[in-house]
Image (cartoon, rainbow, N blue to C red):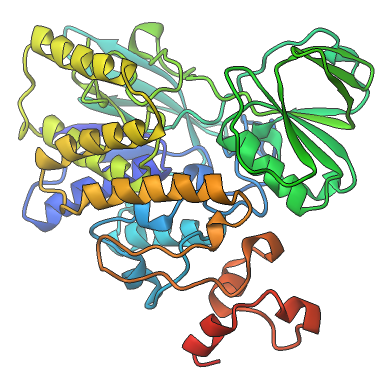
Length: 469
């Protein structure tokens, strides 16, 4: 009997796992029996944008936390697939910070070329998984979210690739229940247009607060206040943006902060992170961790310590994204097929602890980038995943973080060089702060010929000349 593999989720991680098996098949390896379960109607996970918040059109919890006008907040050169480059997909250089529709097109293009869609059951939610230690088999119960039809499957190996940026972490604040304005979590944010002219309070001090706050500034919010718990982000914010310590209480439209200051607000957005939540798994198989670079209990960040037939992809905080998911998927594939032998439980535990000790000593963001670089390198070195210059990628991360510190509104206008192809990204035709159309068509083809004089002032003339327009 051939190996039976279940994959839960067809987002970037699940797509990477499918691609890993397909890459092995292309080299002559036998393909296992694969079923991938995706509760949405298309692949892409977070990148499969939907306007739904809370509950989707099938009555399921809305998975995606994407929003209109979301642009990559890191250089595309840091996430590029080593076996499928941006040059190959688009046929020419593009700028370093694409919007969501462009990145979705890129990740979908690779798997479409690989013919792995046939393994995916769309509109199918996984309701529960049991594991039988005697037979070493997983029994999985699924349901078609459209028809209600239920099915049962048995697998030898199980891959959890649902991600961990979909279940909001929502703290409580005294008085917030009677705040008269809008209160929502970043998961339910779908666009900043409605906050034009509004006084906006962002609770949180990481990527979501930073990006949604600047989106709201871009869309004309009257003011942005960023309320932090552990410390300020410290960027050179626009004049309408300030940082304050954590909110202590609300009184009507007034928020009071830990430093004794207060402010009046029209809306509150909780940018307070997400929870690891796997409602289809028993607790002894489910990751329970804060959002860190190396969660405990996962050997090499992938293999469940107490059950080496269970694998997690993308369960950590991320500097690297798409290409790290690849490295994890290639590693998981080789463990599943026996190409990589598992050391003893004691050896695995010692390895996990070594990574955790190193993580605990990380001093700053540069050290974190190097840490995850070393992690990805170790995975790639164990497999036949195509190598690329990881040290150059780590340098790109550090350049990106420096550019953000220098110009929080302008860092997306920078161009970076691909470490895979050596191609230098083009300067985008429109500065990010002025780019109000994030469609694939506008991104690739540039401004309309009917642009008015003020709009033309946002266009980089050199970029236009370089494209021969």
